[in-house]
Image 1: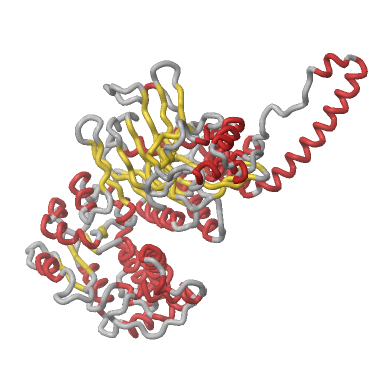
Image 2 (image 1 turned 30 degrees about the horizontal axis):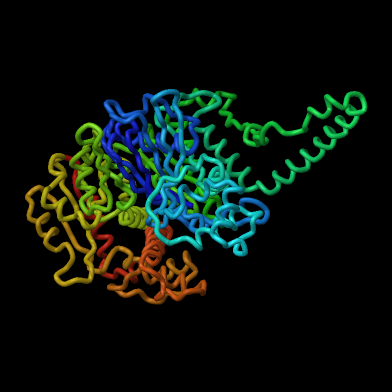
Length: 617
């Protein structure tokens, strides 16, 4: 299962019911106190209640209600629930899915007396019976089976079988209902269901640094939990062996006791008080030089541990199949980090989010960091009147709104030039190619070095938002020339021709150009593409859709459903993955010989020299 959205009502500043959409990579952007961290805190309470526990004070101030609720909607992938050795069922057959076919779990916390939690499934559920069949006891199900005359259609020893028979015989009408999951019957289903929910790991921005709980310790604890989860069958076997031996000793002890006092022996039953907690057995620490505790090091060093953890975890997860679901939630990961480290961290998050069964949630109020991440991952959180929140996403103008709300360049050192491209992939492509070319010919500028030295700032404008950026001239407040490089596209007139003309008409030294080819990926040579992906692409045309060609070639080489028969969402996902690798791994291999073959006019090198030519003001 994977998280699709979060639903908050009467929780802290979210008084009105608010649904927050979540993807594989989700970045909550907004001003301080907008409500970004509240979303991550709500999820910690929902999944764990460990770092953050629910309190009465979580109820929205001034709310007329006596309870607050936190809900999660999960994508459903036909998981089966094994209730016992002979009964297997699934969420659809148990009518636990909402109208969209998703699992929607709601946890409601009543604050009128002692804080009490109730758990529900908000589901499209049959209305034929006085209550959900999940809440019927075995005797009640048997009675209902008899009354309806369908004894031969169900095994009376199996509640699952009887429920399925009753639902099959009942009218198909249903309505959205809150099905209690913490009551007898449904509770058994929920206990199994929880095993399919993803692990949630929260890294708070203001965590207290202690030897046993800091930014470095939690990833190690999480690694332990994942290892335990992956080795669950082996650990279960160990547990059963130990329990068998201990019970054997206990029973032999009781046998001897019966010889002395049968009455006392009859009052005793061997049992295990609780399940073993494997995670508490293993404790890890990372020791510094000369045994200096890590929490005594600088905050930047501690955060670098996070960078290393996420990069290592991304590589590990990419090598795994069917890895358990996990959600990493990190508050303000850019804190105390040099821009170079911020870029490395952003790359690690993107790679981690692409791993199967993995989602990454981030918060930031720094637009420069948000600009390193895909536009589709951004969620702008804004507070309106008391208790009302808006969460903007899938909006062509979201980057412009972020810029207007927060500003664009947080650095106090004003650059000599702002380079504007369409997205983070274009930044990757240009910086990586220029770095590689500079090693062969030092006269070709390395714009990654110019960016690291704060001489140049590179801003992704988000494709469709370009017209808003140009028309509103959001960057004018910084009094810095702009250099725009945008895809030429295949349309007539050329894509963004009007916007580029508007930039070139300025009198502040700004300059704009359209690529003569379709997009930046068309400046990549087919040889390094084939080296990276193991494909057999031949000469690439100026107007080809390179990410689509690459993705389809990779897909078709694996067999199975032909590319043409895939749905648009699957195609887009595969193209997006290919696009990221094209602009990173392939761009890293683009030498001068390759570039001269695909760009004989020297267009790309000309852009690099133009960027470097601007003087410091």
